[in-house]
Each structure stands twice: as C-alpha cells, then as structure tokens.
Length: 64
Length: 554
Image (cartoon, rainbow over all chains, first blue to last red; front, side):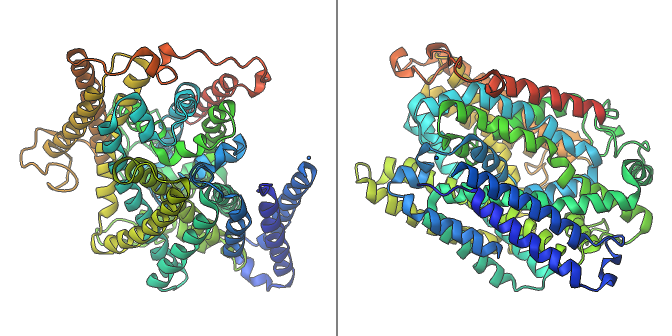
C-alpha cells in the first residue's frame, strides 16, 4: 500500500511545532524585540502543532 | 529534521517502485489534491521565490500580473481543454504527445531543447540555494551544492516521481508556514495595507511616478512611461497573458508531468485547477515581502544592500526580511522554507529530465525495444546524470553573472512559439508534422531576430537585446522587450505552421488522430461527478476570483 503523505506532513509539523513551543517558553524574551515584542516561536509553534495534528487525524481517519 | 523527513518519504516509497511506469509516471495513481499541490510546488523554485520577491520590490503590485493574468487563464485552459489529450492519449510525456500527433522529428526537437533547459534550470536553483546558504548561514558553497545534490538524488532514485511529488507537497506546506509569519509581522510593523501604501507612495514619487504606481496593478497601464514595469496593457495581456503564460503552463512538461501522474481523467483535469487556487494567493507570500522590503528601504534607509550598479539588491528582499523579523527558532523554519522551495524546483526539473531522456531520447533514438527493467535502470542513471549536470550548471553560473538571464532568454525563444504548435495540433486536424517542425523553428528564429534587432531603453547591445548590430526599435523596458519577443515568436510560428500545413500532405488519418485532436475526440461526460467537483465549475470559480482580485488591486 502506498504511503499517505499526510503522515509525514503531520509528523514534521507536529514535531517542529512542539520544539518551537518549548523554545518559546524557555528562550530569553529579549530575542523577540525584532518580532515586534511578540513571542512568535510560542504562537506560531501552537499553529504548527494544530495543523500537524489535523493532518494526522485526517491520515488516521483515512486508514479503508 | 526536514532532510530526515524528505529522505524518509523516499525510503518509504521505494517498495512501490516496481516498473518504469511507477518510476516515471507514479503508476498514474496520484490523487488530484496531491498532484495539484505538486503542480504548483514544482514551479516554486529559486527563480520564482527570490525572483518574484525581487520583482515585488522593483515593480510593486504589478508583479501580480504574473499570477492573475499570466497564470490563471492558462491553468484553466490546460485543465479544461488540453489535459484530455495529454492524459487520454496515454502519452508518457509532452514530447511523446508531439510524436503521436505529428512525427518523430518534432518530438526530438522538443525533447532535446527541453532536456537541456531543465538541467540548466535545476543547476541555477542549486546555485541560488548554495549562494543563499553561504550568505545567510556561512555554509560552504561547495558543501551546500554537494549536500542538496545528494539529498535530491537519493529521494528521487528511491521513490521516482512519486517521491518527488510527495516531497513537493511537504515543501509546499513548509513554504506557506515558513513565509506567512514574515508577511504578518511585516504588515503589522508598517501599519497594515494603508501603512504600506503610504511607504510605497514615497518609493513611487522618488522614482518619478504617480504615488499609487506601486500599489495599483492596472491604473497606470495606459502608457509604458506611467508604470515601473514599462509596459502598456496590450503588450502585457497578449505577451505575458497569452504567448508566454500559455507557452509555459500548457506545454512545459515540468508542470504537466504532475497532472499526467493523476489517477483518472477527472483528477488529471482538476490538477491544474486545484493548483490555481493556492497559486492565486501566492502573491501574498512572495510579492508582498518584496513590497515590504522596498517600502522600508525607502523610508528607513539601508534595509537592502546596495549592488555594484548603485541600485538596491532586490534579490535579497526576502532573505533580508527573514533576518530582520524572525528570531532564533522561527528563523530556522523560514530558512528551511526557502531551502524547500529551491529543492522542489530542482527535483521537479530532474524528474522531468529523466523521463524525457529515457522515453523520448534513449528509448526512441538510441536503444529501442529493450526490457522494462532496462529502462528503469536507465531512469536511475539519468537521475544521477541530471544531478551531476545540474552541479556543472551551478558552477557555470558562478563564472557568468548573467546565466539566469541567458536561460530565461532561451526559454522565451523555445517556449514562446511552442503553444502555437500545440494549439494548432489539438484543434486543427489539418496541421501536418512538417508544418509543426518548421513552424517551431521559424518561431524560434523570429524570436531571436526580434530580440537581436531591438533593445530596451538605456541598455547596451548584448544579452539584453540588440546583439545583431542594427537596432530597429527601442522598447521602454526589458520586460516589454521580453513580452513582445514572445508574441512575435508565437505569431510567426502560428502563421508559418498554417501556411506550411496548407502546402504539405497529411500523414495521419482521422483514425490515428482520434483522442489527439478536439474535433475527432468524443466529449468527456461527467454526470457521475458532483457538480461542485466538475472541472468546469472549478474553472469558473477560479476565473471569477482572479477577476475580483484584479478589480480590488486595480
């Protein structure tokens, strides 16, 4: 059976998102001056996790 | 981690590659949404991302013409009217369609020019990626070329076209999620669209144009002197919107190959239409960063480095914006997105090259009649050769600072007339093989003559036109020269093909042309497909949406 592309997409984005969230929580707030004071690592990490999980759910539901 | 996932996809797919059809055509089993995203991602190479960002800085929102005029109509046309012939004829490549419709010499001409172009294009993607990694991360130029070459080689050899398509989908999402925070932060920083408009009015007035010249796409198209692109509406619509865009989107095997890998006729027709939806939104991700960069350069000073010609280095618009807004962490995602775009462009070219080389050159002219396993091995070898030739092209690019200009120039000579050949071949059964071959040659020669006898204002004779010594006409800009060259190429090819067809005998009977020519092919009936999934419904939606976008940014 052929690989469902949503597994690797969901996996990559979920792992990347979790890493960004963790880094956003432990990093020095001073580095966010360049991103207008917004902790973009934390917020964008959450967006990536949600997208990744959505892809994994679709892949699981597809798994016929 | 990205490299690990890319290689993992290739590894997971290696078991399903059992025949040359699996390797070169994905066994014609790819779902429409995957083929559609790969269709757009294969086109999102270095020239697209860096080039459109640079054009956004240089010309403003007028760059969106490359999408809403220069892509949407052509993508709708190929989906509705041309895919039935490409897919229905069971041709394995675009050159093979030319063989079925015309003859071997027309196929050979198209296959050889296409193979050379794709290798050079892949090499330029590799060169641009290595230069960028050297500039931003301090990586060795040679190391970057070897690393990216090996990764693309491994995942294509392991999983063939399927692996390339799957990774293009992965890369598409990376590009979206890597560039989107950049655009959102940039817009927030300048005060939204109204703040950006105010900054760009400074750019426009500094350049001697009306204040809205960078933020209106059609308002200043009445005269070439009123807009930064230096082109009037007729040249844009006919040169870019017709000759150039239909020549690329409807005949370039790099993108058409993705649709030919789809699982059914309906999926193949929907592939370019599905691709048109994200393509329509792409200006927000690749043009807007360029506009933000030039707006900040004009009002805050020194945002873009100055090149040797005293002008801002527009090619660095997106990399400079990444470095400016993204902190450690998210910057890694942004750079990975940039790398993904370059690698998808490279892989797209290599998979198109290995198919055309194996089926249209090797199997046709060198070693016909061999076993399927033999051609599968040749496909693997062609992939290795394609990567090595790309590396050579990348190093050649370091010697010639204008190799990309040369490539784009030759592309316009070759692609400009090609759509006329396909249009007549698919919609006029009287078109003959001799006419197609000599029409293509005529179009290419006329394009070269036109380019050699005209020049853009302010240029010196050479790669930018006027290389034949006599200048018959001066165009207001290089863009205008390119658009009109494509239009001359298309028109001369069309006229000469019609005339030669009328003076030469048909060599194909009506029976042989069934499934290859519109008037001899039964219409496709899609009663079983829900109305909202039918290609015609999608096409109408796309054309209406792109018309609305043109009106919004008029």
